[in-house]
Length: 167
Image: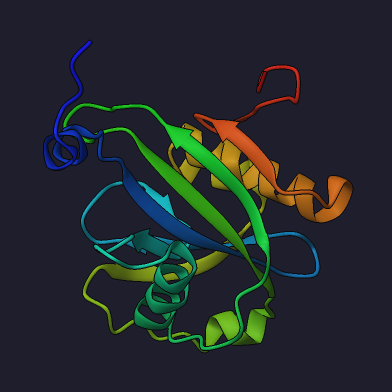
């Protein structure tokens, strides 16, 4: 078997998109969602990782841009593998803990980012009707990590992958 020169090999490697989001919740476990202006579904604060940017830096940057919250980023809650979906290539979604947020803090958010129409706190059931199914599953797993397991989760399409399935 002939080996490719290193430069050709490196150029042939698969490239994955990456995104980073932050899960904020209130004392009743309602989650903060942002209504976007560019698609029908809502999101958690976050966005696409830029070239040469670490996902945790993306999370901090996007939260500041979208909802003007500047606080230390919490721990990693999960990493989700997202398959190719139409024009969007496969990717990895990182979700970090944003901590507890109050109703007063949410009410005080005045979106100035043209991508954000509004923000609100929503129960998991209500969120399922607002976000894509994969994100709804990620939110559910992230809340479970926060409340039950304490350990970061690995997911595929929002479904938790068990240790047995990782073998």
